[in-house]
Length: 286
Image 1: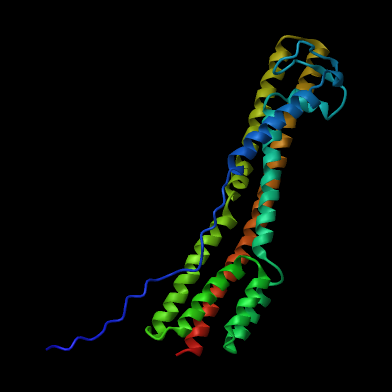
Image 2: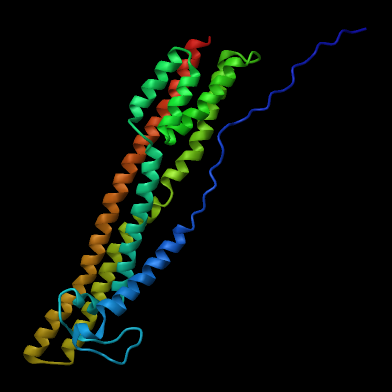
């Protein structure tokens, strides 16, 4: 009778990294809400009848007030593009706060470079549990990825069926899967800042052009010194659109660059974490 040899059961690859379930309702709620708030501010605060010497008391969506009593209230006379630009500015502030909180949480506590050095020290001493404890202290994206990799690292130490190269590949795969779960959370909603940076300037120019059209139309209906006064006033009001658009765009660009720089630092730390784990295992468990 032929002798049968027992075969090892196939080991299914497992991952300790769990997908993060988080909605992104702010991506559509914030812009709509901010534009509505921008209109209400423009219509009922800047456009309050008491702020003008010649108010239009008929009310409506866009009253035709004249003679603003102050420089701030002249912004109302910039036209219907102004509330959209105010809404865009408020949207930028909303996503700046949201990204600041998210990126700050993802950065974790302490220096990322110092955290990686501590993990490297513990792994060199073959003390994985202390390395895991450092991950719990770090509390950021780098710590989360490192923790997932260390759990697989610890599992591979006890595995006697795979060779060293296969174990290193399993650790590397675990780190890649954990990284794939962390990066989308870091980059989410940055597209709004980059989009508004471009669109706000164009909206400002559109508002300026519409204001200039109204100004020159009023110039054609009057003459003499009154015409020159209306033209200069109309140009001044139209330029509020340009100022709002450029200001909003500038803030968007600056904050987008700030956040991408911080995210690049976190991403570099994550890459260094994966390299640390694979190199340490290959050196200590040949």
